[in-house]
Image (cartoon, rainbow, N blue to C red):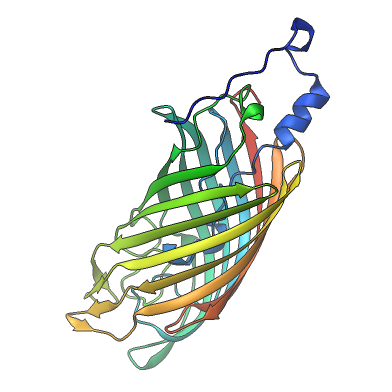
Length: 327
């Protein structure tokens, strides 16, 4: 188990840092990727780009994120929806909450994300072109993460002495079918099925660079009421991603990443479709602190290669507020 770094000895007059010193320390805290799904609120989990997913965070911190993203192209709100030639535009709002946790001496976090989207466009369904305009909440997501090596649970007072090196972590994300859904329509914001995604990853710091890599698999339950009562099953969807970020100091960093996802073949009423994914995407993320409580994150991503659907572009902006933990 990683050893907790020892707090440095200070003379009484230095025991309480000045306001300027606190601002510098807090400004250097990692900007949490609490809004990692903003740009993916209406897309399958495997398509997400999430730099620094397993970074260490001081215990007791809370994060609230709100944001906006615009996606357009051949995307689908549900990877199991048997759509062809989709041309959709989605404007999404995000509401997310994250809490840093002490999990048996290791740092972890719990997050919940609720997307609200406005979708419009057309797609070919069963050989016929159909148009759709809908708005509402998508399926929420709940995730629990733990860094089981290299990231001990630390209070904010001990965090400045922590030097990240190699971090190993894991998470599990669950998405219940609570979003907008109309079985008489082929395109919806909700999926009318459960999904669960376990994920493992590591992060390695080579100051000022940080490299991280994650791998996960998403399992889906059956949608037994798709478009007129059809049953849709989907095989597991596998994904990997790698991100390289550069830290400019004072909480400012930029990251370039790529993801590859494959699998997810669907079966509609017992008939297997030739729609397995084998796609890759590339994205950029920029994190900018505004002060000790607020920060901005700007992101953009695009498809690199696409076998089936999901060739789309996305841009987004997230405002994040943090509090608690002695901040």
